[in-house]
Length: 166
Image (cartoon, rainbow, N blue to C red; front, side):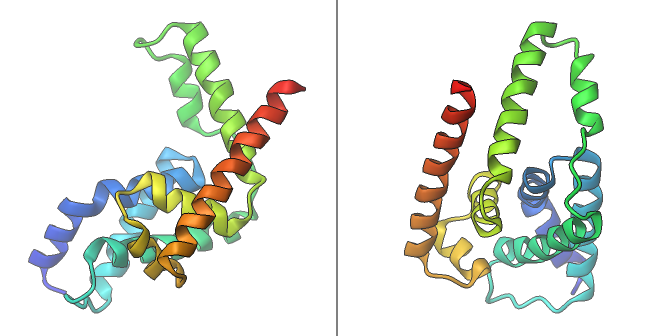
């Protein structure tokens, strides 16, 4: 791949690649490293100009995240981002605590979803990909993506409501 093509792909799609990875692993520092890994792999592979660049990069990112999660054994931890947010000058301490509680509740609810549901929600909300692009990455139909998103969001809502009621 030429440097010009890689540079154009990087400038156009880094943010969505990073957002997808960060959404999946919930760790800013590792997400930055994995995003760099995605573009390194892209540089070493053959790019087909007929394929949308973002979908191709997100497919590489999906595989990188899966490898990362496998290597970590899905251990849960509190990232440094959470610690840094506690000392943020932009928010009051009570606002930070409420936001962290909401984030932890969402992460816990997401962990109760099936892996495929988590992946599709990550693709949907962390990137600007359309259902047909997600379908190509996940090797399913576009209508199936819509159905999975709908059901997964309904499950998330129920998980969050159940947790609030306890």
